[in-house]
Length: 285
Image (cartoon, rainbow, N blue to C red):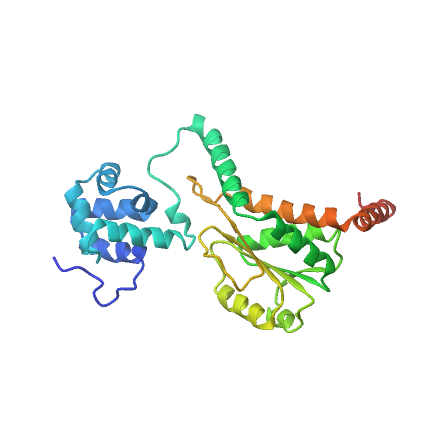
């Protein structure tokens, strides 16, 4: 049996599985189809456990990983783990479902564990320095794409009550270049870049570093610490469900907003009062 992908060693794990299906024997086809539905199980379990879950023999598992171009199971599992870090939701679901009566409890445990993991790796002094920078900045630029845009918007709406010079970018039909060209040392950028990241994220971080604008980078735990950012907050979003758990990201956003509001002191309280009074006169609340 000649292993596939000798001419394409960079092919992804899932691409290898999909391409192999037409040529597989019955047991291998069962395993391949199983892995397309639950690729995270290869990343999480050993060969014996995977064989049990998919209903094939351990020998079939060994033949299959060689057929898709890996010398052994451990190399295949490493490739699956690496691909899981890209943020594909395919790698989150598992074949062994959690009983309904335990789902809520498990979800709470995962949220608490994610928040604890995240906060344990954040220096409170970094949050204080970011809050000071936000309050003294000429403009605070909030950037996010895809799911990350949700948290950029959240930060915007919360900070706007304290920092009028906050702007979330880009808006529909706009390019980042229109804003990046206006950024300078007196500004602050908060870039939210969770899985799956936009394709231009690396170039954007490099450009912000070139300009020298102080940047706070908010990512998931799969990103390595990035020294180009003045602050890099890594949030754990792991979960056993088919969707990522963003409780730690929300908590971090709350920490940023709260510390900024407290540091703003009486000025923030005055602005909040004026906003409420204006809303009452306008009949908006």
